[in-house]
Length: 208
Image 1 (tube, rainbow, N blue to C red):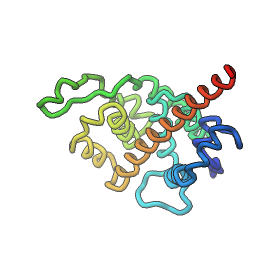
Image 2: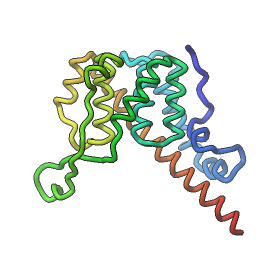
Image 3: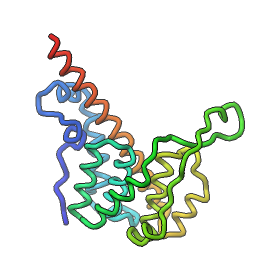
């Protein structure tokens, strides 16, 4: 199914309306606004085929999983809905798996030394046999790596990349996976910041 991409995903997720205070604020940085939307389009609605084998269903599945891990409701719903329009059964499975895989984080360990005092233990998620059956070995491995990047960024190692290669991810695919995870982290933080700012401006107006 071909979906029409939103004109500006960040505006949609943050509830920005044409001409409102946040819209005027974002308009002061037109290049930042443009590049953020172009990054979304490059990952989720490319104008031409891109290298690698990460198809659109996988991209939206990873995005829905990562957005749910971040617990940003608007982004989680957006990517879950986009995935459901492509594969409703997969969307249901991803929602259930993300709920089970959620954590607080970030966790991880630094090399032995002064920073070791900041080490934080935490669970590392890997798909169980039933989840691998639902997702397939390739996507299950992709979810495991996405969870690692979200919650254990300091713990990523060569063995984690090899696990992806062993389940059919190419080097280019792995880069795309990392780009999706990084973009979601950026997008969600911008949306959350704009929503906080909008709420603050609204309260200021109410007090005026």
